[in-house]
Length: 354
Image (cartoon, rainbow, N blue to C red; front, side, top):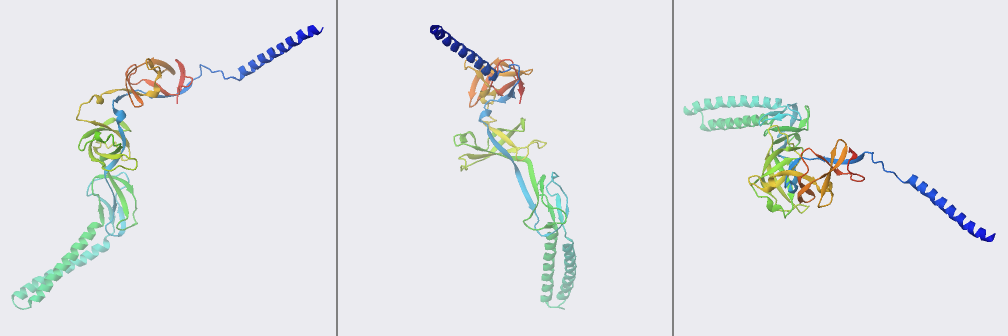
């Protein structure tokens, strides 16, 4: 009997262990996430378009107005009328603000009456002096009085002229800092005028790349907001002293488009290739981020997004520039490729674009 128990007990223990292991396997299987291959994967994409090869070496900068000023009155006085508003295009010499000049005009009338009287005195004393009827000193005093009155009249005319604030150049009103009824005083800004028909474009470059720019050479400049608009900029200033970031400022003068598309404060890029020099770097081609490439170096591939699916496509790489890749074959303008979200991504997977 004992021998039988020695056989039955181990078998029973083994059976219990097997049953427990099988039960644990089922529990673990239920807990493990089962990936649904039909579920759409969230990805980030980019639409392919031809770019200037060599643009990776472009430097980012900011457009600024070539001319901008804040206008203030040269004399103090109450503001009777503000003739423009923000956004108004103004021309050089156009009246913008009118100050109260009624008191000055009254003083001018008084000065003109004084000039009239002194001119009559001069005429009368001239006749009398020629006839030795009066002393010559009286004529001299009358003439000096007339000169003084004319200076006073001219001073009043100049003061009256300064009560009308005029535009110093063509431009757009970009800030209105006062209203009718306010008090104007010298040095207190009233309006801001900005001329964006000509712009300044400034970039900061490292000392190693500073030699790529030469004064008075013309370079290709694009505004980020209007990448299809090609502008030309002439280098007018190359910094002689490094800034806080140990880079050097390079400034260009750029003519704006006829409809003034480029605004002050917009960002853009300049390519350090002289427009007047033909260069292989000025060709256009398909450029994609290196991070979009999957597969091996001998068989590079990208995921194209078509009809809601990510499809693997072979490509040929022409060259690598920094963190970007020039593609010679396999992609065309308008193709949409996956640039991020490769986790769980596979050929013909359903995708949704973030």
